[in-house]
Image (cartoon, rainbow, N blue to C red; front, side, top):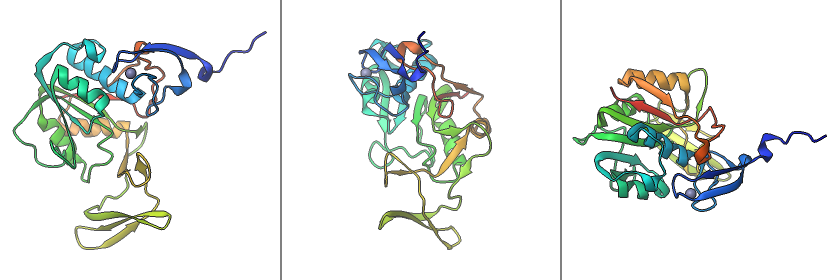
Length: 256
Ligand SMILES: [Zn+2]
């Protein structure tokens, strides 16, 4: 009698929807949100889910990037998108990547310009933008055309209220002291604050987590900003998108 293999031992075959490569015999345990699981281009589940969600919402079907129709009339921006999908998107759509620290710049907390887009990709950005984060949700709504969509991801909890780690963040710096990273903040009314036990994404000293959202709170914030639909991007075994972590699934939000 043989015992059933644990799910982590199972191997799956799929096609990478970024590079188009056939990924054969990939361990299910390696299908991680951030870990490379396409042996050819190194794409992770998060990147493949973003493209899967974008394709479904924008084109009505989930296509490999290379199969995207050439649609320069579809205008969109990314917010520090990874080059693995940003470059192919640029060849197919009226898309450009933007950055917080360099040109072409886009800061979702600042008043929006005149450009309006059919789509915006915002992946793991909103947990890092300066408070009050409500402004970022309103601006996201503003930069979309009516009917426009945002492909949105952040890590979140499934219940409760969003934890705003530094609600009074105003004039602040993050410095490395000994083995510790320290956040010093001067509040709007001039009080000095100091925080340790900081949470960084992308490694120590990288991007500071300012809040941890919850799914119910995200839905409320999108609604408050004017969005009418918030849909979770579904699994797609064809692209190695199975058993997606319910605490960080990609969302499609649509401006009515
Ligand atoms: Zn790939």
